[in-house]
Each structure stands twice: as C-alpha cells, then as structure tokens.
Figure 1 (cartoon, rainbow over the protein chains, first blue to last red):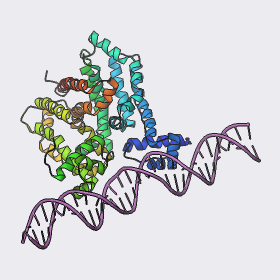
Figure 2 (figure 1 turned 30 degrees about the horizontal axis):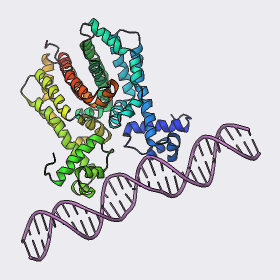
Figure 3 (figure 1 turned 45 degrees about the horizontal axis):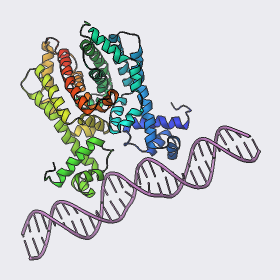
Figure 4 (figure 1 turned 135 degrees about the vertical axis):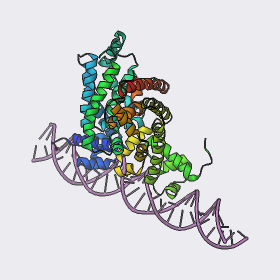
Length: 204
Length: 204
DNA sequence: AATTATTTTAAACAAGTGTTTAAATTTTTG
DNA sequence: CAAAAATTTAAACACTTGTTTAAAATAATT
C-alpha cells in the first residue's frame, strides 16, 4: 500500500483521508501527522498551515470529483446517452469515494464563498458547452424545458444523495453495508429510467 | 424575539442554532453559552456535558424533522395524494429549516450507530403502517414495484438535496438567495410531477 | 426570619490546539 | 570532501478546549 512517496505527498494523502472522514474541525494537525507517520512540524513546514493544507486537499478532491463529469460532457454523444453515462459514472465514482459529496457540500457550506470560488471548476464545466447543448435541445423539443439549475439538482440529487444518506438509511432500514451496496446498484437503474423518462419526454 | 425562557431552554435554543450552523466540532461550549447570554459553567450544570447537550438537541431536531412526515403517513388519503402532500410539506419545512437535513446526515454519519439508535423515530414511522400500505398498493399494481429503500431515497433525495446543496449550487450558478428560493418553488413542481409519474405508472 | 436547596458566578484545571523555534540531521551543491 | 541548503526533529509557545470547583447570589421551605 505505502509507496515511497515524498513527505509532502504522504501528508497530503493522510490529510485527505482524515479531512474527508472527520471534517476540518473534527481532526487535529497532530492526527494528520500521525496518520502520515510524520512529525507535526512537517505539516506546517510543507503546507504553511492546517487551513492551507485543507484548501490544497479540497482543490484536489474537487478536481477528481468533477473530472469524470467533464469527461462525459465533452464527449460526442447525444444528450440522452450523456445522461445515462453520467449517472453510470457518478455511481461508479461514488462507490469508490462515497464520502466525497458529503464532504464537499458540508465542509464548503461552512466556509466563506471566496474559498469556494478560488477552486476554479465552474469555468471547466462551462468550457464543455454542456449548457448550450442542453438549451439547443430544449428549443428543438428534445429535452424538457426547465432551468439548468433544476436539471443539475435532479441529476446530482439522485446520484449523490443515496451515498450521502447512507448512514441514515442504513439505520432506518437496519441494513448492512453489503445489502446497501446492492440496493444502490438497483437504485441506479431506477434513477436512470426515471430521469431519462422525465428529461426526454419524447424518447419512448 | 427573546421570550422569558428558563436558563435551560435558552441554552438549548442557542445550542440548536450553533450546532446546526457549525456542527458539534465547529463550536465550543463557551460560544454556546455566549449565544445564550449565559455563563459557561451553566451549560454543564444543566446538561452535564457538551456531548449530552448535543444529544438532546439532535433528539429534538429529529423529532421536529419527522413530525410532519409522520403526520402525512397517518392521514387517510390515497398514496398518490400522500406523495404530493409529503413533497409539499417537506419543501415547506425545509424552507424554514434549510440546514437541518445536512446537519442530521452529516453530524450523525460521524457518530457511532448506537447514538443514532437511541433516538427512536424508526418505530414512529413503522407505526404509521406506511410500509404495509405501499406494499399493498404495489401488489395491486398501483405503485411501481421497487424496494421501499429506493422509494425513500427518491422521495428524500429529491426533497432534501436541493436544500443541502444550496451553497454549492449557488456558487456554481452564481445566484443569490432570493433567486435560489424561487428556483426551489419551481423545482418542487418538477419533482412532484417526476416522482408521481414514476412511482404511479398507471396514474396518467 | 432563618435555614435549606437551588442556581449562578468567576476562577482554575489539565489536556489539546495550531504554530514556531532552534538545533540536529540529511541532502544537495561547488 | 567541505559548505550550503533543505529537511526533520523535539521542545516550547500562547491559546482554546471541556469540565470542575468553591464561593456567591438567589429561591424555596420551614
């Protein structure tokens, strides 16, 4: 598991794990250092401060987070296929990183806006021209006419929420990890069908 | 605004505000005391510990949170109406308390399971017999045949996520509070239509 | 009114926080 | 190899943390 990473990389890796699991306020610099097998002072030597390390971690996680999205948006497929593949890829990614959506939404909700804006992923999405593509399809009548914000909410909500709500749903329904994972595979199909039917009314 | 509440009530009220806004680890006992206009020692005098105060707050918030749900489940309406009213009431409640879903999902995801189970709201939901009602309707063919977990995920996800993701979406879309609020009113209609169409295939 | 119980206060506690320092070590450079 | 630079270390810094204490103030009881 442990590669011969540089000290900086080791700290960043450990910090990512700890921050995602416990949040910025839920852990200490010493805990991160210990997780990385390093001295506390090295955290600040390489990353100036806990806050700065956090920003670096968030930026990297966000990048990873939007990478697969961007990839789908840029592809040369009809919107209906993009929708299906988007959901497929999101569930894939989230199965491997189930705590990331909650981490992003919750940790960043508490920080100031400027923090959010410093991480430039909005431009990246805009550059894919996905918005224009959707609008064009709406004018042609292929896609249901609704605000892009609502489309985002439908897509992201139905992909991310099942992972964010995992602990709650598991407690309510008294089901273990394995069962919940299987449930998610099923759920992905439902979500795909529901969203495709709703967003592309003429498709069936 | 400030009623002549008891010290205990004042502390609990302040703690609720602060905990929801900043999370358990994001605030101190002193901050809660200050928000309540009280001495620090009073927090522990009346609530033993910060942790215990947190549990009391969570229990109350959860109760409030599931109260409107339970109410709809128990009503003597056809499932399709219950669905519509459920969504309506959730959006109503969440407009007033937008930070609660994120608070519950995130703060409780980090605590141990026993903590979650100590708050008995699962029984309350079961007592409404909503599960049996859904199952009966599924056997009659009125409701799409899918696991109750998936139905919960669809309902809750499409209600809660738009409020949880508010800071993120606002940053991505560069929209202010007022605009987002209006967007949510629209979104509620979309969600209702989409979910009703999907869950009740024979309805149209 | 005097006594008891409850509530509130300021101060202190030990432990933990992010961060800095200055010396020791390792690595790189000339 | 010696000098300089970069890295790592242990220790300390000032500050905040949750919690406790013991005295003061208030309320309730007899």
